[in-house]
Structure formats: structure tokens, C-alpha cells
Image (cartoon, rainbow, N blue to C red):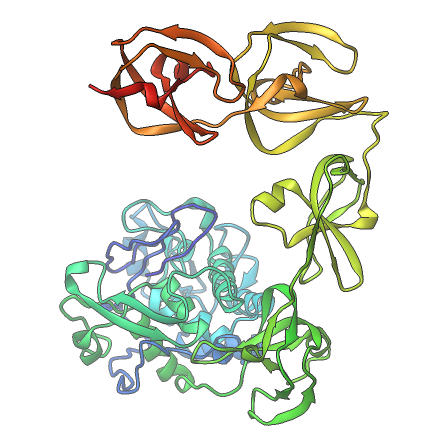
Length: 591
């Protein structure tokens, strides 16, 4: 059983033997390991000891990432040793073949099992790559221990020791994409696909990607049924976190006492992983350390004079002075959740040396506000948006793009420009190198998108025109409110275009000096109130009087604004019609 996030799609798995419901965030993959086995050439009954099982440290990061633990020939020898495909009961094969839903592979007088099977792309079996090659290739590509993948196959579908597997077993070999509550998703079918998806998931978590149970204390249930209870588990390795992302439950006392057996309210996936790993590969160890890539390389500064250490031995290597800025690429995560960062140079040269993160701090970025009138810039074709603190490319542009730049900053000898959109959306660590930005060419004007829509009212009856040629479009009445989301500058005059016209690429805009920014907020509840005196209805942002309403009139108000120290209430009628007209709150009282 497992719980994974895969592009917002819900995926999961139904056990071949029995299943439970698994609930996860965005993506759910849920599998309980088989217990009742078919006739088994290795008939494993006695379980290894569970006395050392620790739900917070099921496997070390080093062990899950030890991708060179077995060669392809080692994997093949293991598969053959565990299952030599010895079932030669042809009558049984004929009886099984009457089931048209699944297909069994019979060749040379016996059932073909995993150790002898070959797999093409998709669900094709009988030709192509061996299982050993597929497992080894995925282990190398995703830097995952092939022993982990072998154990996963066994605890999910029993394929390692199953003497008579069918094509249905292979298409969901690791249970990826098969929820208990729905049919398997065909996009994940196929032995090769299943192996590689599982390996990719484990690598994602080892590299610091999303997981539903991060390092530290997490409440983990004993069973999909919340009524079965659970406990707080201190997860101390990313590899253990990856197992819980795959199987989001821990075994209870009954499941631990049962060995490979069942128990009331039990869950067995992570328990069986631990047992098979002990039985087959000598158990879980914490030997060695594993470096994982940072999500984004980052520059950091030493807070004080600090000793770089060898994370495998804990011994000091050399000393770095205080205030030194270094670029870091990889890290080691310890069991307590702390980390030790390795520099770009150390990563490239595979040095076993790092700096504990507690001695490092982020590099501060000092921003300078760009004066209005110089904020309009053009991003050159081929420019790249960069995560400044790591000097890492996060986006690339192939065309000329006009953008409003709000601030600039200097970092590591370079000047970066940050767009208004990024600045106002708390993304000011992302910018463009000054060499990739040029001053806006006013002789060849283009529309700029505002960082967010501006709500403005017309101060006067105003013509909408095409500012490029002064062609008349229509006239809008004064005091009407619109959302404006782009602008253009012609001869030093700024013209704004409504959100509707922006979306539909209609070149019809209004001069900036005909507009005034407005802001109304909703009442928590609409309110019917009465005028306690004759009251002027005005545009609170310009002071223009619209009309006068008589004392005693009952009106429903739904929005309000605060201008120059006074509240103004706007009627339902004016709000729904986008009219900037409101009544001073001082002239209104409750019914």
C-alpha cells in the first residue's frame, strides 16, 4: 500500500490477495502484501525476527540508495535461486487457460515465471528484456538499491517466488496506479513501467521531494480504518519516509507478533518489507551516508569560523572562515533530520566533506526600487529567469517579452532585475541578468501586463481608443468601475486596457489621467439601512456629487470603502452595475 503524488492524478493498487482502502493527498497508491501464497518453490514460513523493527527507521538512506549493491548477473542469479520455474503441470495450465481474462506463459514444458520471463514495452511478455535487466537498469537510472526493488516486488505481488504468474500480475507488478476503490490506471501498466515508476518515486523522496510523512514526528495509522488507531512516529531517514509515501501505515503490536501472518486491525506492507529485507539481504543497516541533490543549488554564508567534516567519520577536515559565501549542490541528511551541505566543488569531485547547515545562513539580497518611468523593460529572446541565490535557471524565453520591472539587486558580481509580478507575489529571489534585459523601445510600443488587475473608475466620460493610431472605439460613462490588466505607453502617456479587452486582445484603451484607483470590500452580510437625513451620493474617490437621496429611504448596502478617514456604503444596485457611487456612513443608521 502506498501513497504517492503524481501530477494530481489519483493512483493506487489493489492487492492480488486482499486489499484495504488507502487515502492519500493528491495521489493514492495502496497495497497490502500478500499472505496466502500459491504453491511456492521456496515456501517461506518462518519470519526473521521483528524485535529490531523501528517504525521511524525502517531503512537507511544509504541502503535505499546503494544502487551498486548487485550487478545484473547478481540479480539474475538471485531470481533463479528464489524461483526456478519448476511447475510442469500441463493439465493445470489448460484449466487456468480457460480463464480468458488472464494469460499464463507456458514454454518448454513448464510455466514461465519471473526469473525466465522477458518483457517488451507496455504489457508485451515473452520477448524483450529480462526482469533482471529491467530491475538493474532502473536501479542505475534512479540510483535505487536493486534489493529494494526486489523486496518491493515480493511484498506487493509475490512475483519473486510465484511459480505461475500471469499477465495481470505483471501489469501491476509493484502496485503502481491500482487503487482498491477503482480499476487500475492503464497508463501505469507493464512490468517495466511499474519498476521504473516505483524507483522514480523513491528517488524523488530521497532527493528531498514531496512526501506525506516528512522527517520528524508524524501520526501514522495502524490501518486504513482510523478507528484502529495509530501513534506518533519519529521518522529519521528519507528512505523510511519514502516507504511511508508508498505504504502510509505502520504495523500494530498484533501484526508485529504475527511474523508474516495477519492480525486484527493490522497493516503489513512496511512490516513485510522489513522482514523480506532481513530474510534475503541480511537486514537493515545504517552503514555509510548518501548525498542527495538540493532541489535548487544555493549560495549560503558561514555564520562563524566552521570546521568542515567527513560525514562518514564525523572527523574534521579543514576550517572555513566566517562570512565566506559558498555554493552548495548536495547534502547528507542525518537521522535526527539535520543536514550537512556539500559545495559545488566537493560535489563535482565527489569529496566526502560537508558543512553542518546550523553553521550557515542565507545570503541577504538588497533590493533597489526602480523609479517609475523606468520600470518598463524588454526581456531579450533567449533570456533566462534565474533563482538568484543559487544562480539556477528556472525558466527560458524564446521571444521578446515586455515586462514591468519593479526592483533590482546585485549578487555575486551580477545585477538582476525582478519583475513587478514576481515582486508582488513574494518571488523576489527570481530575476533576469541585466545583460538579458534592455530598455523599452517606445518607438515600437507594446502592451505590458500589470502584476495584478487594477480596479479603477472613470473620472470623466472617456473615449476608448486604439492608442497606436487614435482610432475611436467607444465612450464609457464617468464613475463606472472596471478591472484593468494591461497598459501601453505612447508619447509618455499611459493607456490602460480592461481585463476583458486584454483577454480578447482588443486594442481599445483609456488614458491614465481619466482614471482613479478604487477599492471596495464586501459586507460580511448585506444590510438594509435607512437614511437618517438627506444624503449626497458621491464618488468617494473624486468627491463628485452624483445625486441626493431623501431622508427615511430604506436601502440595501453590500459593499463599503474607507476614504479620507470616513466610511462610505455602496448600494446593491450600484455594486452590481459597477458604479462608483456611495453614501457617507454618517448619514445612515440601522433600521
